[in-house]
Image 1 (cartoon, rainbow, N blue to C red):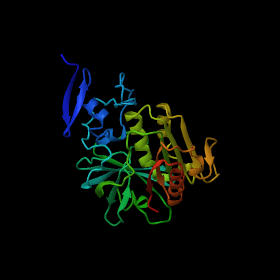
Image 2 (cartoon, rainbow, N blue to C red; image 1 turned 90 degrees about the vertical axis):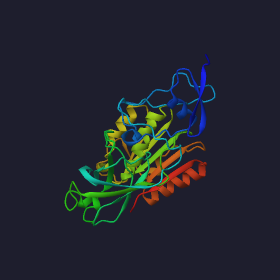
Image 3 (cartoon, rainbow, N blue to C red; image 1 turned 135 degrees about the horizontal axis):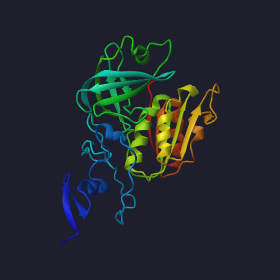
Image 4 (tube, one colour; image 1 turned 45 degrees about the vertical axis):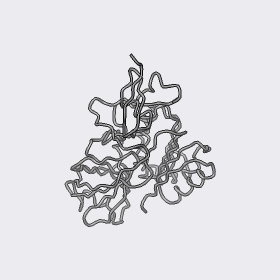
Length: 312
């Protein structure tokens, strides 16, 4: 009996070895996207997967995530291709503060929205301007299939959505969602992954980092996260999980010296990036000055850069 056979996926032939599942072969060949729908799209589960025990000789890093038994099916969207924006309705089901100037809002939608880690959506609530936000996971990594978790900046004394949450915008408020939008989503493959997050820009960076630990556990990752006020470094539980899964270089930065813990460095985020390489893939999410500075460094090194600018 032959040790190999053929399978057609998305109109393309895939060669499969004995003992290899069709999904593993299709993922390794890039025939289907490696992102997962719903919660699994952001890497939800108990821990990152190990590399395949016997990768094929011509592919040094054929990595497949270990899926929970209850995981949803794989998204059949080809890699690097963003789906066409669709509209969903939902309601706000949870609101809680993450820091002095950061609020978490959870929206439960009526139908699942297929997005990749790092994608954005347009959030519309009656009485407020539409906001372009990045769905993420809760700080501890939890998420449900029909949930979209958002991190919102809170500006005391200013009229903004975050300040209205729990007051004029309580739980149960109707929400309109349209997406995915943006090009800053996670793309498996390539060189070192350099992730830079300013303030609530950590939301998409957290989803990208967690997904990468499942889909590409052997990929080198560097993460730099910062806030103006060290009290707003709300992402520490997430960073603890990333360290436990093997990310060795994680840097915390704060502009203000007030109450800055010993492990938090001063200065701009761009000053704490490692020397960039041509093969690096950089994701940066933040304000205009942070994004611009990182883009300049990436361009000088010849690295690929996917910037996302937070709304002022």
